[in-house]
Structures are given as structure tokens and as C-alpha cells.
Image (tube, rainbow, N blue to C red; front, side):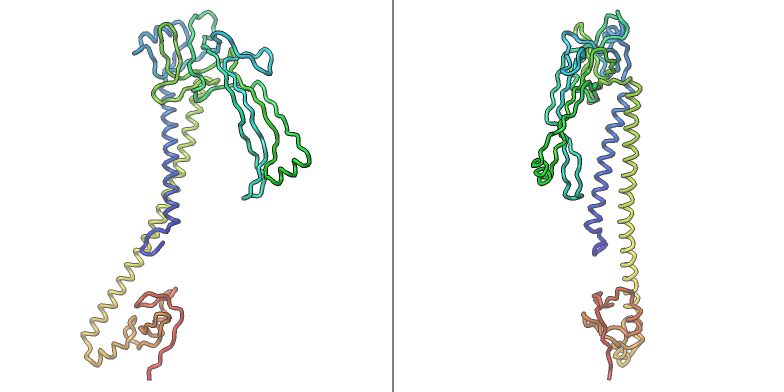
Length: 352
């Protein structure tokens, strides 16, 4: 604690940081909990002949947050894999990722570093159709790249190691960067993949569309079933809840430590003031009882015990106010009873 009982700069910064982190973690927890509650309350509809009737009865021919499961089917043409034969899909993502080792000057270790140097995503319109043949109903999937979770399957992956000469190796050690190579990846949402879509379901003229919801809820195009998707979100909520509790306890512990320090400092100041008041009252009482001669004697009396004669000089302040017995009884670190300055040394006082 600093003078006056105020928290030190370090303690104040620690309390502010822990409070900010707790607030941030709690904000993420509330967002995750809202998403989980929204998923749990989403309306599950079946991709069958009754879907059109359900939307006609809904307000505005729209279900704001719905869950529907079906199989991916291309509307017109499909995308072909550049590396795998007879691999057709509706979403294709090509990625080039650089891998290298970077020297950390703090830890003096080589750390792995990855960076995407190029990525391209191609899409083509596609529908969700029932797994059973002949149902005659389809759902057009809109803006698939806006989905918070888009399940893409890795169909091709190859690592191209970098070729280095001896001169290159020396140069890389000097620069602190050692290239490892380039990883080439192709991911696709293949035709025939079972997909769980969560979003806004709307009937637009004769076309049923699944699109991103307008209430700020996440849009999902997941390869897992709805129950697994809900369990995953609930697990995230539990994780952030535990993290919030841990950071909350840490903030409370820091606050308790600071308040305890302040209370102890306040108690010590109150006790010191009480002792000073008692000494002042005793001195005034003795002054009234003693005559002028006695007052002259009291002038040379120790200000602590008021019985022994002053017998030492405190340095560096120079006050003569205590007897040697009371000086030895002062608590450490010893300070002058008059000005509270630290006592560096004591000189005995001899009265002739």
C-alpha cells in the first residue's frame, strides 16, 4: 500500500486487468449461452411434402430460426476437383499455406509458424433434398459462405518441402527464418453429403430458401446431426461458464487482498491516533497538576513514558524527546515519535 492507505499502481493495475478479463469472459459466455438457447428453441422441420404447407401457415411465410436436414444436390453444374478424379461438389476451397520456423529472441527457441498465402473459394448454387427419393421438395441454400460452421471435406492435401542450398541455410539462420515448405489443400462440400442447416426458412414465390437469420443468430451448414451440434454448443457454454467463475474468483481474491491491506492500514492509523491522544491528555493533566517547577521538570521528561528524563538525540531529525528505555521499546522500523522520520542513529545525551 502507498501512503494514505491507497492501493499501489501494481495492485490497481492487477485489479483493473482481472476485472476487464472477467467482464470479457462473461460477455463471451453470455453470447455462447444465447446461441445455445437459440439452437435449443429452433423449430425442427422435416424436408417432406408438408414443408410448403408449414411455411404457408407461418407468419410472413417464414420460420425465423429453423432446423432442416437433407442431402446436397447441385442445381445446375457441379465443381470438379482439380486433383481427385470423379470428385464433384458445390463448394470448393483451395488453400496454399506456408510453413516455416521462426527464431524467438525471448525464449531462444525455434517456433513453428504457419501463414495462408493464398486461398480461393468457388461455389455453385445447390439444394437440400430429402434422403428418400421421390419426395419432390427441395430447399435452396443461400449464401453458404456466410455460415458460422460450413463442413468441408479435405479431398486433397500435399506438402511441398522447400529445397535449400548450403548458402540458403546459412542465410536463414542469420535472418531467423527457416522455410519448411508449402502445403497445398483442397476442401469440398461434395454432392450427396448429408447436411444439417440452421437458419431462416422462407417461401419465396415457389422456391423454399434457407438463408442467414436476421436476428443475429448464427447460420449453420454442418455435417453432423442437430443433436451433436447442440451438444457441441452446450459444451462451449459450460467451458466459458467455468472460465467466468475462475476469473471471477481471481478478481474477488485481488479485491479482498487490497481491502484487507486498507483495513489493516486504517486500523494501525487509528491505533496510533488513539495513543497520541492518550499521551496528549496525560501530558495536559500533568501540566495542570504540577507547579512551575514541576512544569520545568516535565519539560525535560520523556514524551512517551512522561517519567524518565530525555536522554538521547534522534538523527537525522535532531529531536530530543525520549529516554533510552523507550527508544529501545519503539517498534521496528524505528521512527521519531514527534515527526515520524526514520531514525538512522542515536546519540546519548548527558546532562551536567
